[in-house]
Image 1 (spheres, rainbow, N blue to C red):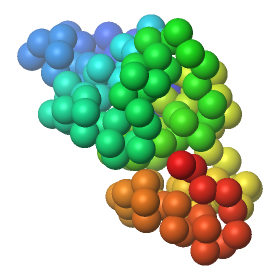
Image 2: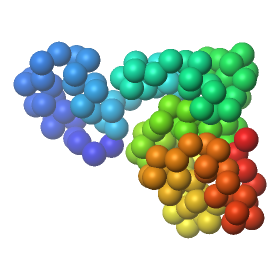
Image 3: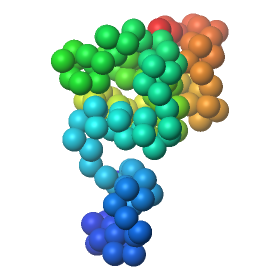
Image 4: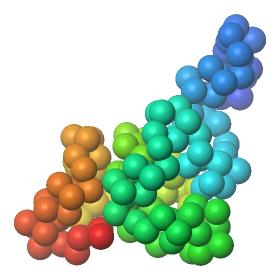
Length: 140
């Protein structure tokens, strides 16, 4: 979180509407679970759920179970969703955190490869090739 509650309150008073305020402050808003954050990114990025599952290389029915919380989400599966949702690094960290998984860590060599793939807006396939090239376990 970057802004204090007082800063957010002041900004909210001048904001045009709630949707715009949330869109402008995603890192400072507390989402109620992975499903709410997932739906937020789908809506704000104009994505189709099917494309997200395809981009994450996760079966749709399995993916829905992860998103709605009926099935646990491993860290790698959540990272796969980060690619499917086309998240930037801050958004990816937020999704990992809300899912109860460890955030990407700059001292972990495998995480460094993933961080750069996210920063460079690579696909999951490209990220997996980078991981494989450096001798790390691929995500999918």
